[in-house]
Amino acid sequence: MKKMDPPPAAAYDGPPDYRAVGRHAVFPQTTHDEIERINFLAQLNRHLSARVVPGVAAAYEARVLPALRESLGREPRDRHEVRRALLGEPAFRTWSALRRLTMEQRQQAGRWTVLRQAGALADKAAALTKDDPRLQLDPALAIPRYVSAVDHHCMPGSYHAQRFHGDVSAGANYDHAGFVTTGGLLGRYSDGGGHAVVQWVRRNLPDFQPRAILEIGCTVGHSTLPIAQAFGDAEVVCVDVAAPVLRYALARAISLGVDNVRFVQANGEHLTGFADASFDWIQTTMFLHELSASALAAVFMETHRLLKPGGVVLHVEQPQYAKDMPLFEQAMRDWDAFYNNEPFWSRLHELDLDAAMQRAGFSRDELVHAKVHAVVDTTLFPDAASDDAEDYGRKAAWHVTGAVKSRSATGAAGAHDRSVS
Amino acid sequence: MSLAQALQAAGNKPAGKRPYFLEAEVERVLAVTMAVVQELAVARQRVDTLERLLQARGVLHEGEIDAFAPTPAAATERAQWTQEYLARVLRIVQQEAEAALAAGEPASEDVAREVSGPA
Image (cartoon, rainbow over all chains, first blue to last red; front, top):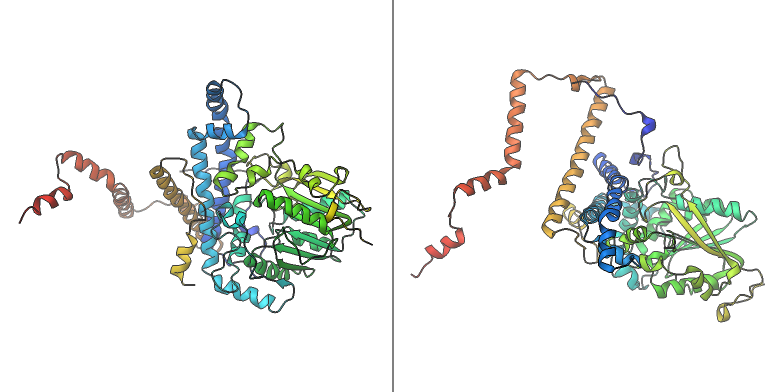
């Protein structure tokens, strides 16, 4: 049998080989087969978004929407009507079943790799962070209901479960196998979101020289370290409710040579350990959708309280469900809310975030909006800006909602406003 | 943590009730199948790795595997392996065919009642 000609390399469109990811001292060791399991699952996700979703979209147009119009006697009014109709469509159900079990297989694959070496990883992290004042844990901190009720993105034990003292396995699992979901779109250190924010700030606020930076909901510091590196004179504080990811985060930062960060276990709704007007820049990245309605309001209030006059707050999230977003796209984007354990995702993306920011004390003319893409080393990793595949909620293309706080600090912040010298 | 504990924990369910999109039996079989598909991909890549390592060491040469022609005896051994393999994989189909011919068979539960009758 004659061997087929190999396809030209330039025609390749898909995730890079997992071996391109950046490693550091607490990154788990991976065998050949563990790497290939991650490669396979990344390709499976790519296949589902590039080759299966178009069939779902076609089925919606050809069968679901006409039947829905017929039964309603009108056009569907919202994404919930569309999603419920899709649940009767075999193409949607098959895609959904495959997408769900891809998440489950990814978790099992990543957790096996990490748990079989959990003790060694904890020892490495402990050796790097021993007595380091930049790790401030609070064992008494309650895990909020919106984190504990269902495990986000089907990650057993979420960010916070610990199997033994000093456990970092939740951080190691989240860090090393997130590649499956993003197909490398977040770059070498899963930090394309952080680089995107830095690029935006450099271009749009060229004179901004932050000295004190806060990231809320930092997990292992993926998005924080590029900010800390870009503004090396700044002191960066990262908070999260989960101890295992924070232990891992400091060890990872030290191993990557980033020293101007400290990691604090705290709830972003009540950052009572920090005085008013403590920060020049407050950042959240793909964090808001893992909150609740009341927590979102509290976090926004805290950002207003903690921000110095002239300071900047930026929230990076997937795009809101604007009126011009087709209901089919909204329903597909809602998939993660209902079937991938992201229970606040749906509500968050329909909220008027500008109004929420104003309720927290920012004035309308302080608000900023932007669109950013992951910024990665495109010699090895795919460029989200030129990626045509739509993976409804997974793509590394985000909206920024934020504010530049007035220097006069005379906003409508009421009791939360303080004038600062 | 022991290997047994790690294996168990790796497969833990996440908190939250699982949604099913297909008949539960069908979705269960699909999940098992996709796990097997995954492991086949892993095994295929491992073979590819071996081939490339052997080529790099000059043990195997480009095209040798595609040009491989087993001796008649080896071809027979390989064919027999495939037959045995298919018979194992499709055992249920064979047994259902046998059952169709054995119409009216009692179940063991039926026989249990029969043989356990009043003392």
